[in-house]
Length: 175
Image (cartoon, rainbow, N blue to C red; front, side, top):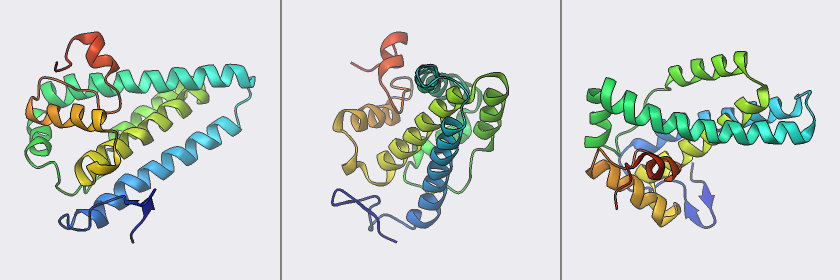
């Protein structure tokens, strides 16, 4: 099961046993999120321009939710479990975080499907970036990889995984 992207492997064959379970979970969720986003966009009853605007709002909302969750939930409320990830970032991922999918259901119930579609696509990007940062960093943009790796060394900086924007806004970016 070796998939290539522009001639570069999606995972490092020399990595520990991580690929099988980690790839299945990360890319299973990624594919499901994108497929669901496509369905939501295809069935949107709104004008295309409104759908696009709401989709973009969903992307931005996800990046803010990602930052807030990472900074205040994972580092302040549940630091032990997340600390294990910081200590062993290449360990296999063996669970789906059902809480995020529950949050997506709530978002769907209170907003337009296009907003959720944007959040789902941004979540798929998060899954890809986070997977690559720990399993095959060579295929990520160097600046994004560096940003994330600094966070693993300095846990009170660089909370954004998919973007540096909120770290700049809230003053948590390592300079």
